[in-house]
Length: 266
Image (cartoon, rainbow, N blue to C red):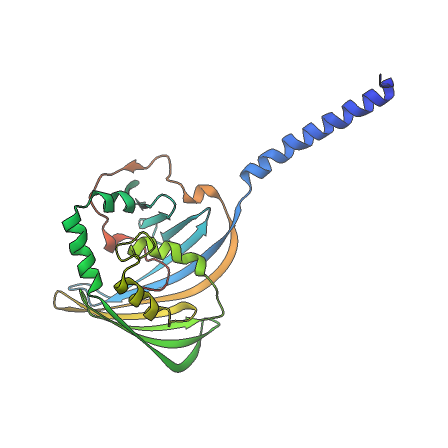
């Protein structure tokens, strides 16, 4: 038997421990996760009948997800979840969202359709020229790379990348968007390996990417410039669909309406 004073002391200690656990539990549950924040300026010109545009997008990466949010209050946000293959597009102007699952999309395609798409992607030829040109952009020392892509669409790119930033963890998100990852159409193919090997010549993270292409007889130019990269605390709710948003069913996203993705290896 414990002495009454010892018993009282022990109960008090247990009570304090339980109270402390209750006090700490909400903090642990609600604690934010350290994530990556990127601010990018996206510029475009050449669209028929439209003036050159400039839009700022904010990228948040945490909890195994990536969110690309337009600075426009009525813009479109995108959330990527590589674990499930889900791509969510949320229209803040009308409070609607639609979802595309890349895994289901690929599984739902017929074999002839898959083979045709794969053949078209295999036609893309990529050439990367490493130059000796360097410059400082937004505080990062960058090297210039010239990238040429021919195939379904001819694209000329000028990429200024820095090795002062290591964001290889973002590759799983860019892979999901381009379907070029381990589960993509060109996975384990000679064409896919050749394309990846060429793009691997671009060392570091792209800070400024200038692209020129021709689409339906119209010359188009776009530019993506990273202004800010930092690590900061993020709440899980940032990567969830707001409760008052309604789901909209559609076959494919309006790519032109989605917020600009962060700069990365195309």
